[in-house]
Image (cartoon, rainbow, N blue to C red; front, side, top):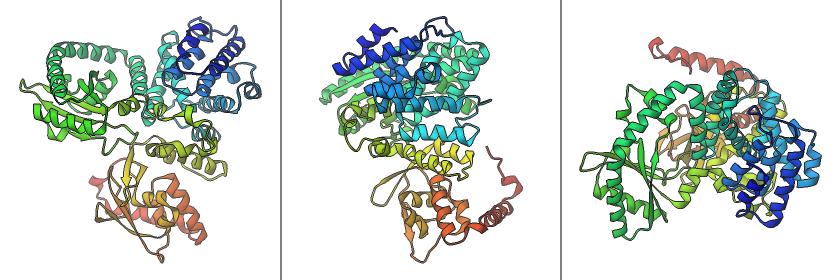
Length: 519
């Protein structure tokens, strides 16, 4: 990738003045990185231009693309943030600063097991960078993807470190942002370096299996195509091959072989409307016998990262098992590009609402976790102690959707308790919580919520928070609100003692055989 190729790639997506800015950024970065080489021996500028090209493919705004070109200048050259701000504006310098802070936060970490720096200072930098503008992480994902694509030039030890970090940190982060295609690319590349023998073995097995089933699947596709045309449903059908890393994870779950995996190849039906999705599902179930336990409605109840599709697995008259994914074009775009597809920067960046302090207003519901990062960063800066294990749960744990009785959607980490929900709705609701109904039935304080639960908080004005509640919340948000309330009522001094009592009671209740070690 060179200057001319990048500008040609950008022409269809940006206005003339934006293209001039991009050309200026390329010239500045080329001059700043002059003489610097990558491990391959190629000029260093190839890397930031590749990052910018990827950001263009993802449909990002021009400021993000400019920051992609310039993302290493402040860290690796004499260029300053003030120079960038004077030349390209505050947004670009802010994004470059954010990317630099994330890089510095990661620097010097030994034996990375999860994306949590070992010091409060570094952790603050990371959280502030993400919390203020999620585009920082999107740039880092593009940066990491290109580094993985050129990893063959690194020493073996470095390859393993970068691959492990990519698999444990950047893959899950892409997934949390709904960027399915990027997650798969990162996982495939990282896995090929972490376990090349297993990767090649599974690659060969997958190739052989797909070779045997492709012709049979073609006949099913033709049959479905004919049925949809007869019902005058505009559509597109294509195939989806399971990634090697996803296959590896499935095989590890139990004593299974590749012949036990049904969804090595799925047919994807893309239609224009949500109503058409359900019409297609009905047609498929008319043509073939559905496997009832494998019907998933991720349109009515999306996955926590916002993914929407109908999934069904059917058995054809020839006894072939086939998985279908049914979605609209809009859902497909989001499934591929995630948050990059849902940010409409071109329309919003001039809006008064679209400022760094108000970016949470444009984030969809399933991205609420991003808006909570800023709260965490503020707590850290003020000196409040937040255990790193707690942050790991909040940021990287699996998420669930729960609903209020009015149908409002709330996004919580998996394992969250009813009090976590109450405090997320409003701190006063949490403060006066007396009981909970989940799906119409009374629900105990210490039983975690499940995805799709409808949660009603029963409040009483006379009910006040208790120190023992600290054992009944799992989110940083709820814990911070609860601690503040306990301080007000003078209960904070007894928290440690109360918590110890609760833990001791819990331990005594469990029989030794029932105790399970912490993961």
